[in-house]
Length: 136
Image (cartoon, rainbow, N blue to C red; front, top):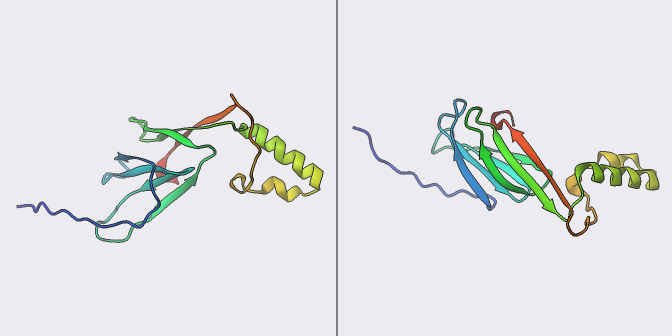
């Protein structure tokens, strides 16, 4: 006879804005796909009662929707920002600043550490990201 035991374990974790459960052949126990700020979080509990790990994937824009593709179990993430430059426009801005300052290292700087000016009203940047959560 099986026991209907429930384990409740508090998690010390950043606030999750949106979350969805998922299950696949590679992860039969399932897990949670979530968004926190500009970061995609994949949470799986392999062995209940033990510590677990998470994987962080920085995103280019603010995530607004996430779906699981049923046949592949890939994550389809819609990212978008209002009043923002596109990726290619931001790269052009970085190139211009590197030329003006004679600092080529600026080109290699992580975009999350750069404050870009606002693009203006009615300007949007977006992308659709397809992710295999098991290759993160």
